[in-house]
Image (cartoon, rainbow, N blue to C red):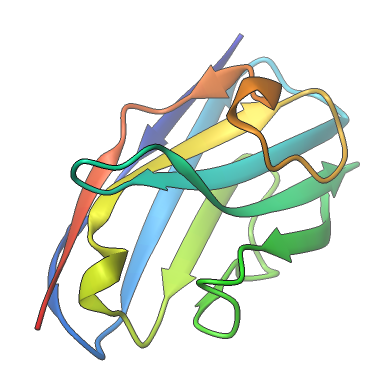
Length: 127
């Protein structure tokens, strides 16, 4: 089992930045894909970004078009944590953000491809 705990959510003005750490604990895997999803009020859960990990090293990161160029996963992340750096935030980025992980290694954009989920953290962007 893998336990995921997000933190770092809060209120930020449009154009601002926010970092969301996700701490992973429990069983370790040589290869793992970790991702971030978000759910805005009244909308379905949607993919934000995923990154593959192999041997403790980060691999390819795949970003949703809506966040490409604004959100990044710092390459210095340790193998047991995943941070999401969000820059140039917009009001439409307001959502509950969830960290997720799967042993089904590779680029994974679908919700049903993930085995483990955090409890979520609220991000609110004011205009």
